[in-house]
Image (cartoon, rainbow, N blue to C red; front, side, top):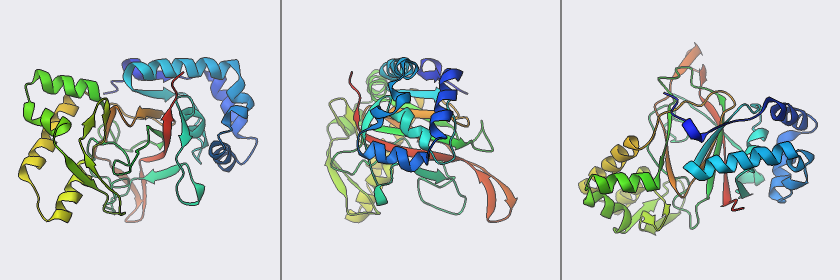
Length: 293
């Protein structure tokens, strides 16, 4: 199940101890979000240490090989502060949301249809794909694993290069043309943002089946051919990706330009029906730039 192979980096226990100590000295999340907004994380003694520099080099090497990396062994802070430090190993220019917030928490619920919170199976996609310039990096940390793991809450990451190669070897010209030559429109139902263009431009992909469907709904026409092509993209992405489950504290860093990511159906364990239950909970943030050195 955990097909991580070279994408897994295990943080040294010494470094994990340093991180716990550094994050216990202040209001961690508020302080780190301010430093991130000011592009001043490098002023932290932890970031300047040799141990952290060595860890950064290892993480970037793994990321460069696979376009994503899973970090294991760092503390799972209840406020998500650790994710900011870990994400800084490969990216910069943190995206801010309402109130200057950088870290968001998504807890799965059986009572919502929101894509980021639903327990229903997700789809291979990129994040914020209707924005003029989507973020370069998506980062997430598992706070609470799915109670039904490893059957539920499965993650997958499909690299664009592997996807295109698979479609070429399969001689699936229609799906290749859909991704690289057809002009499509994607629409965010929750905002006024929309985008039109090729799904794949050069070595960058922006893609989400739901935003494609939203655009078709807005236009008043659901195109059977497009739905069939999206199903073929999903089949190819499954074929070129490995399933893995994020354990408590695991951090997933991925290129939002060169990969599609997926989360399978989730489960809940009711403590008291219907409102008290245990479910998968993750912290998420985005960054506009990828480290190049």
